[in-house]
Image (cartoon, rainbow, N blue to C red; front, side, top):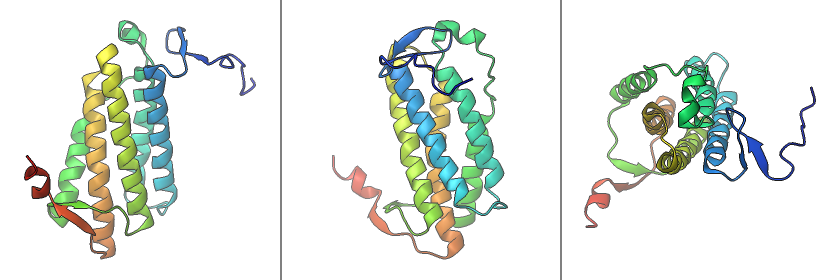
Length: 189
């Protein structure tokens, strides 16, 4: 089977169930964001040692994202026919890791400048990409309901990636570059 089908040459593509939609349809846009996010996670993993303790967890997240993408591509009225199962513990697993890493290095009270190490920098890039996915999913949700667990998952993913970026610096003994205390955000009312 050839990689090209020519079916999308006129700006339309198929979604789950066979419906053809414009390539700038919000469902396709949201999936494109998730696809890009998954690719950025691949860059994160490629910049870690093969035996890094986070490799298995990031690999699992990447696989989960493929299932999530199939659900995003599925209109809500056809979701029952989607064979890809979303694990009900996805959000809980992320929360446990966030809590464990935060306990090991302490809470954060500042906005931080991304950087410090290659891995930390790419984790911040992944975090911002996860936030973009979340925004596109919120837009899709206004048109056709997105599974609530998917919205929660992306919110926690960006939190996890932020904590992982901090932890990578902590482990390397690099001081975080701070911008402003979180109070800055609250004092501008």
